[in-house]
Image (cartoon, rainbow, N blue to C red; front, top):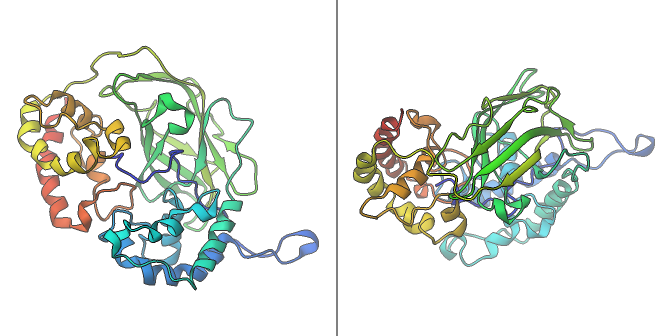
Length: 381
């Protein structure tokens, strides 16, 4: 279910600009600099909370908890991570366009008040101006730099911008900041870095390079080039861990973006085989198939092309749902329900991009979790 999401077409979150809380003097002759994006956000944050928080908070009824967080700084971190909010064209931000749609909250959700819109646009414009430019020094094809969501949260980066061959493919990881202090971390740790191709399209990756982009400064690549010797091919249902699955960037700064470039990334070879089949198809059919009917009907059965492309459940109700089982298995960590994406992305209290979170109903989510967990455990080899 990890692809029934609001990720933008470029598969990145377009991110926020200046370092949180930065400000002070700047410009020629020590002239006062304008307010930072974070300072502009603080001006409109109370209005956003008043108008949007009832649905878009953590555990709210809307599937996009972009205001998750207990403090303005935490909400800033979440909203600037959320795909489609901070964009290079501020007026196209979903924060401005979606509330005007008749589909917003089934037509019952409020619009942003007219007197609030100018401040929102001013903030979004400042964020857009701080977006990192493309890096001509990249070693090869790259995804646009994006903001990460730390705190041990799941981050998903779609690879669509690399070309049509990479549609619906993604790289996912958990992120947490380390070292220094909470206001000035010196490291970013990525764990469980996984690559997710689609059926019949083996993905070949050579030497992925992670680069830190501090606003206003050139990109700063991973100092030790951790994956310089990596040459790996991924298939749906096969081993999907990128290298060791871990990376520590010692050049991290708060408010920075993260970019990924590749010496080579290609789709080749047609169908490279069935990958890893399901170990417990009976358990899947008896418990997971009934639990995932809503996921199939709402998105992954075909109603949402991106969702179906990423995890195809169109054959979920087949007499022998072998294909669907393999598709779902590619989005779990066998033997570890807590680290499995199908449970993380649908959790109403997780600020993870996904368009279905049981409408904020924790009881419904927990019932789903209870049905799915035994199968995830049974898939451990």
